[in-house]
Image 1 (cartoon, rainbow over the protein chains, first blue to last red):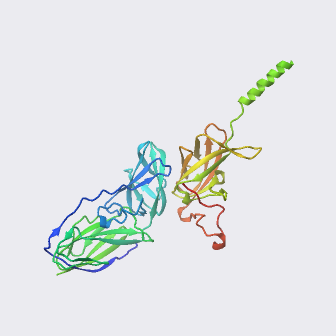
Image 2: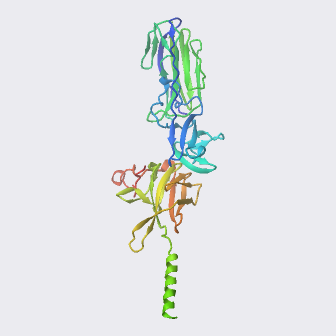
Image 3: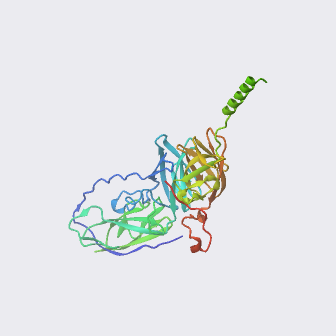
Length: 247
Length: 170
């Protein structure tokens, strides 16, 4: 099993208490549909998330690297995603896989599992008769990356410094951090698709996880002074972040 | 047989011959690959028409890929060997749908699905015309497929290379 230990240097976090949090959160803009037009131009294939750990399906602008970049993403081998096929002259269409060895269609008829690296064709059919197809690129993940977002909200009277792999805060306040685990291919291109994910902390008193640990975006809240390691297992990869909370 | 009668019989025979004059026979199908062209290899009809190929020369497709073709049917004048285009709805059937599945679309569109490595023969017919054209299709395993256009030239790679090349597309 390929393992990549992602180690962020100790993050000096002067945290704790006070300093008013001016939370001016705005509603997230709706993410535009990611659509693939069939090779014959008779159907469209719209991407959907099969689980929370999909880099294509993001709700946080700071952690949405794929939002701007991909008309249709490269999919990680081992991941799951969904497609909805529709034809202007047909309405909703059924899905089929040209080669289940590469792309397996689940019993729900919507969820696909990328099994082998390569180009795989998905077929849109009506009543068992093929109407159109689309080719999707499946890529073997080569590395894990942990992306870091700015804290939620804006903090009055707090000197936050987000640098290269480090976070510091000089005011005494509790700070919430968000990190995202994503996989990349050998060329450092981010891959989409939901992979099994699990976050854990070595010391919840220092750094506690307040989000669903099965999502690839994790929310960590600083606690008492000390050092904790927040680790993630994402697909076949593991990574960790060391968080130091100053007093 | 009297002269006028002979003339009438000759006229009837001539008319009959005209009525039974067969429709031009489909003997050539040319194609251009649209979607999926980068996962195919073919032998171009000519260097000036690198995207066009005669389907009877065959097509190589990478495993698991879907390919869209735009095809045109022709009849060859035996005296001039000139190709004349034929018009009608193209139909295509596969000798091995588990290897290469095929379905048609409007505007002479044909989709090929390379389901697994192997070979299949796609038979093209044209509604209203006699004749058919067979296209041998080879599905190459994903790991061993080489795009001829991307392959090193013989002088660079120490041999090999291909006779055709991927090109065109839509």
